[in-house]
Image 1 (cartoon, rainbow, N blue to C red):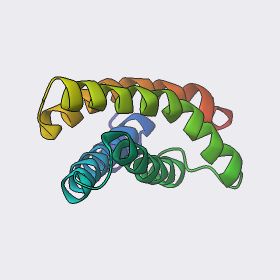
Image 2: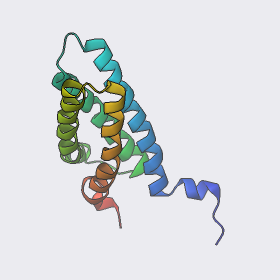
Image 3: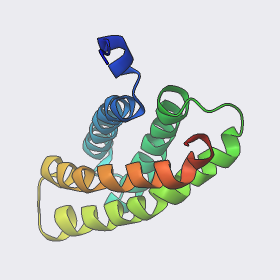
Image 4: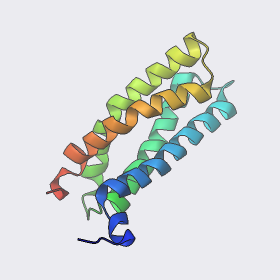
Length: 136
């Protein structure tokens, strides 16, 4: 009946939110930093691709190790995570081109708007596809 704070912190949904907060912060900062460092030498598309590779790798690792705590099958689950994030990555890159390249939004605002939409999509994809075999 009474649950401790420690027990509540072990709930998969709360672990997902904590990992998601870290992953979101990481992805946001990496995207902005790469943009600022490379805006004169790389296209927004190239910056988006590089940012997504780094962000997806970080997210996969935190979800695998901390949230879903799966064992083995690193390559299979990593590839599955790319399927989940692949659609989001394409959406993000195209959105960055439109928001920053065409509509002259600041990179800060554009990244924030794109990240918000990805939270729900990635949770559902990981829960129902990437790590599904581990959820009952």
